Length: 140
Image 1 (tube, helix red, strand yellow):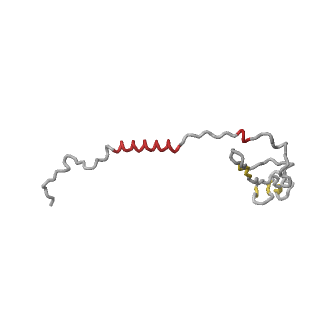
Image 2 (cartoon, rainbow, N blue to C red):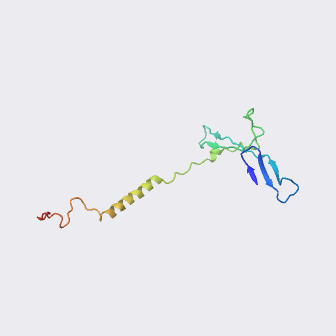
Image 3 (cartoon, rainbow, N blue to C red):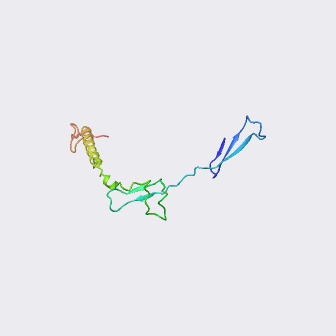
């Protein structure tokens, strides 16, 4: 079966090995694309007197009463005009600050690294037992 998806109408070629009625052994079936991809427009719902944040997204419901010619009509079937969603809105509680807690962990890690390095590095001015003594031997 071959499918050509680049064209507006899809063409499918079916191979009929069992069917002897067709002389060429294959038939072509045209399929119309009934389901077109609908491009939904994004809308912004923002009101100056509301505390609730603005909504930016799509709205799939279609009204039979509200239209570009009649934008102020009320559609009682789709929308409930008695509910004020601004009254239901509650501010989110402030969460834990991650930036402060992450910084504390990094400071603790730095202190741990300093403790580990103390045995490896020698402090400034430290001399081993034989290090400060000069010998009179000359190398030829």
